Amino acid sequence: MHVRLDDPIDLDAFRRHARQLLATGVPPDRVEWNGEQAGDGPADLFGAPHDVAPPAMPAAGARHAVPASFVALCGDVILHRAPQRFALMYRLLWRLAHEPALRHDPLDADMMQAQLMAKAVHRDIHKMRAFVRFTRVAGDDGLERHVAWFEPDHHIVEANAPFFARRFAQMRWAILTPERCVEWNGEALAFREGADRREKPPPDAGEQLWLTYYEHIFNPARLKVAMMRREMPRRYWHNLPEAALIQPLTDAAEARSQSMIDAPPTEARRIRAPIALHVRPADGVAPADLAELRAATHACRDCPIGALATQAVCGEGPLAPQHMLVGEQPGDQEDLTGRPFVGPAGQLLDRAMAQLGWARDSVYLANAVKHFKYELRGKRRIHKTAAQREALACAHWLESEISLVRPQGLVALGATAARALLGRPVAVQAERGEWLHERADGKPVFVTLHPSALLRLADGERAAAYAQWLGDLERARGTVSAAIAA
Image 1 (spheres, rainbow, N blue to C red):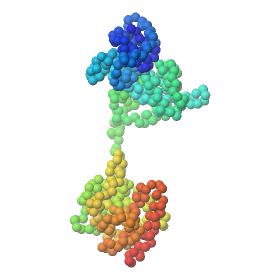
Image 2: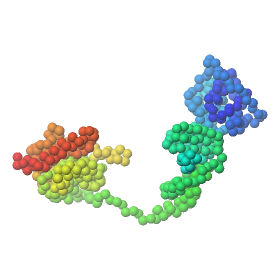
Image 3: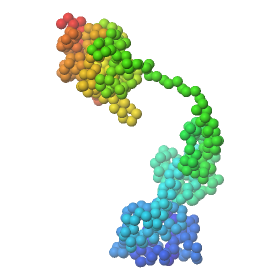
């Protein structure tokens, strides 16, 4: 029996014929499939096949169940260019109906051949997506179109067209191939017969820009010629604008790599000057000055944070100020620069102080914890609140800093700073806005929010919270003398 399919990729037509043949008990060796009208060539060398009428659907009782994966496999295999694909698919269908164990045999020769054909189709689909190059063309209607020429190995144009429609939905484009062409007008896909290579549009201005970009991103030190030719086979080169650059760039790769090796090293950019870890006072001896304090805190390994941070971040500002503002710990930017309150929270604090007419250089800014604690998320370092034992490990450094700076009053920004200064848990919302006299050295402590707490609020809540926080800072600034007298 001879079967002719008018469309070489019409899976529904193949399924109708195959079902009828299977239902009537025609074995695979009694069927000759032919797709000659669609350009596939004859499937058999003997004689000329004759047409048969499209079969009627088999009776319901004659139907055979096959795995859903086999239907999907046929959808790929039918796109292959090999004429024998129809015979292979029907042979597998016949065997699945009569050999139930076949579906569990991964080494069956027929099944492996079908899978290899499907893999070749998928590879061709991928190559079309990778190697299509559009050129701007002015249409007869005055509207701009983008036209590309491609030569696929298999019947993949219709299967691949929806991808390009999604990828270039806002662009009017057409892809021309020798057997099938597809066009997108911004709303719908339209297909037509194949085109002649002479219809390929000439280069446009964008092509030279692409070539310049390609030449500049070509890295000779990472060139692997065999891998490049495997991923970009030579049969595609004649349709790729950048192909003209590949051989000259490849030939010059060794010399360019050697010039990179011979070039003098780039001077390393240091975030900070090296600090000797051995510079630390003996146990029980307080630092004599702020410079010694900075070196000692950098060398501190009383908790794990110090080993992971870039550097310790001590405070900055004048000695014997009226106010010393103490935050929780340095953030990412503070850790890199070695200065306190230079990140987003510090910028918000600067804004508030500017509104109050409170000069930043008139206060001493510090943190209760001297190293940045974080967790990695990809390449980003995300702030993580210091544990109680980590804050306790830094407590003596904070006390040394207070004794060296000699502030009149201490402003605790947040719960961690308040606990470090008062030696007890502090409910910030309940105790904020007042001077507390609990320290042994007699220095009053004013408790308010840390600016980062405001940054975490929802947009609708931030304005009111900021106004209240601004009132706290204004009260702290204006009443420190009275607090000391009390």
